Image (cartoon, rainbow, N blue to C red):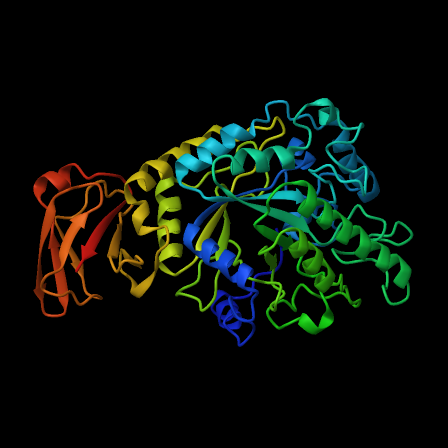
Amino acid sequence: MKRDKSIPIPLFFILLVSPLLTAQEKLDPQVSRKLDWFKEIKFGLLMHWGPYSQWGMVESWSICSEDEPWCRRNLDDYTEYKRRYEQLKTTFNPVRFNPDRWAEAAAEAGMRYVIFTTKHHDGFCMFDTKETDYKITDTDCPFHTNPKADVTKEIFRAFRNRGFGVGVYFSKPDWHSEYYWWPYFATPDRNVNYNPRKYPARWQQFREFTYNQIKELMSGYGAIDILWLDGGWVRPDSTITEEVASWCKSPYEQDISMDSIATVARSLQPGLLIVDRTVHGPYENYRTPEQQVPDKPLPYAWETCMTMATSWSYVPHDRYKPARQLIHLLVDIVAKGGNLLLNIGPGPDGEWHPEAYERLQEIGAWMNINSEAIYGSSPEPPYQEDKIRFTLAENGNVYAIYLAGEKEEHPPADIRITGLSLPDKAQITMLGSRARLNWKKEGESVFVHLPGELVEHPPCRYAWVLKITS
């Protein structure tokens, strides 16, 4: 993921709504239809995984020579550290890898698309590329003899079999490639370490290397719905805005010719969504606020990408967010018109931490009752008030979702709603219950009364959904 010094949140979202290309403006009809699909599915899975999981540490960033917390390492000798990091390939053997179990757990949780890190910034490829031997299928990697060695292919197969949309995470920078970090020079930061204008042939080799790898992923891994490009500092200078200026500090332009990449990708995958993160324009079909939720709906398609634990990559004793918090995040994001892309980092053995499965089970139990308030919904003013979030179904039903407090195991007997004006004939029920609820107007408020049985035995935990039909 992108690691940078945070822009203050209010400024961040003001900049995001600047008059740039909006989600469906000037889109090919096939892309526009795919974007409509994306906005309906609401809940997805992201996975960061690679040899670095053996050390239980941050993905890629420890080999970046920047003075940032996520770049810290446990060895003073950088050259030796990088050598040992790259040698992790020779011990990476995730023998418990079982993508069918992941897909089943994600499906039961109500997730509907998956995005997998085929290559992070360190350049290690989790797919069978022909462009480098720094990959999981190389003979120096012990897992290469496993029938499921091409883990990207296996993951996409398993999730497609359960009806998931499939997305390719791909890092534009490649810190292992000699065409990006040329060994002739030192590597002072995350950027290309030579001047592409002075060495145009070398930069062209990097362009071709990137183009060829993306072409491999678009042509050899089945139907792909999303190409999710990370590493937003690799971009034309003309696209650098105030929003990203604090971490786009390279003195060299890093244009990899997105026109060519998009053309070949969509020739092989018609209707493909392309997410060139933070590079606002025709190849950022939707936006991806990271570890943040906006204060209000945004005027374009978007997803919040967020960790289930604290780290993007596997950490042995990481702290996983409680199910209540995860469900509330999903509800809050959907009420503002976005998607939640929730990250889980597999371990070095190819398994998720048990808590990840537990959280997905709890989310699934909630979704089994309340998913009609989530899928295919759109924001409904006033979007939120106090503990309540609102969504609107395509058929006109409105859902008022009450977010329970940390120790609130039962809904209140009377729920007050002030942001909606209901017609006298409106009917209200709670999802998971057949009881028709009494309600009354008092001034500008609506009070919904829950019978004692429903208060004592609610249909689910963590959040309760009132369905309002006219």
